Image (cartoon, rainbow, N blue to C red; front, side):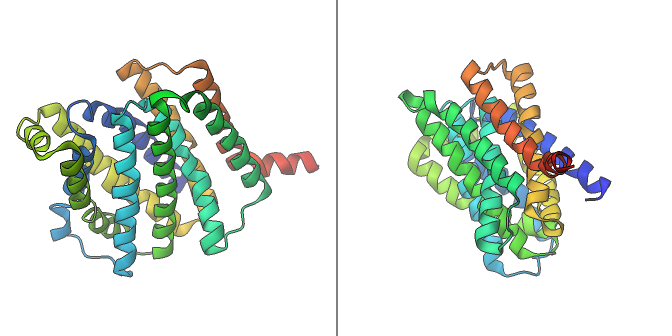
Amino acid sequence: MPLSHILAALLVTAIWGLSFVVIKLGVGTMPPLLLAALRFLFAALPAVFFVRLPKTDWRRVVAYGFFLGVAQFGLLFAALGLGMPASLASVVMQAQVFFTILFAALVMGERPGPHQVIGGLVASFGLILIAWPRMTGGGAVPFLMTVLAAASWGVANIVSKKAGRVDMLGFIVWSSLVAPLPLLGLSLWLDGPGTVWTALTQIDRNTLLAVAYLAYPTTIFAFGIWAYLLSRHPAATVTPFALFVPVAGILGSALILGEEMHPIEAMGGAVIVLGLAFNIFGPRLMGSLRR
């Protein structure tokens, strides 16, 4: 993987890590699904009038928009709105690495190496540590929603990979057009028209800034680069860079939101990061052990 691609992947993960903080701030002033709808509305408009539809099957564009916009971020925004800590969400969402590798093996025949299997098992144990104290009380629902959001991200990664080497800016822009109406419909259904109308008419500057950050750096730029990297490298090479997302997420949550992780959550997060790290450095480690 060229150095320029490595640096691009690291920049993307830093942007994504801080986005968890922005989402948490945003859902404090606006219904979560409405915030998600505005994110993708502004990511799509007015760009669709200037960016060509990518040369790929339109069904892949729709599928990517659904699994990324409606499923992944609908679930994630709702989970954060229900009380999922931003720092913990930034860790749990990295289960997408192993969902992507699993789906790539099932759909595309990309066989995972032994280090990827071991890394996945280690990270799964970390998820169990985090989930265990949350399986009673109100913490179970937002946690499970976050895991499902990670699985949806994994599906979206495979869809973008199946699209091949297409214009990724066009792919992201046009797929963003899929999400706003379903998300708005869900918000109207779950939150009520009155709540949605009040949130839209009383939107403040900070919420607008949150929407702008989520629409442009996080969606257009970051997901465009991510999809570009996935189209040129194996999923197992690209997705482990998500190891650095929780680093930015945890630091941002601590400094801006004042969040603290409970000891068992910190332990589970550390185990997930260990599994991700083994995914990246496993071949080198296993090679050195054979010498």
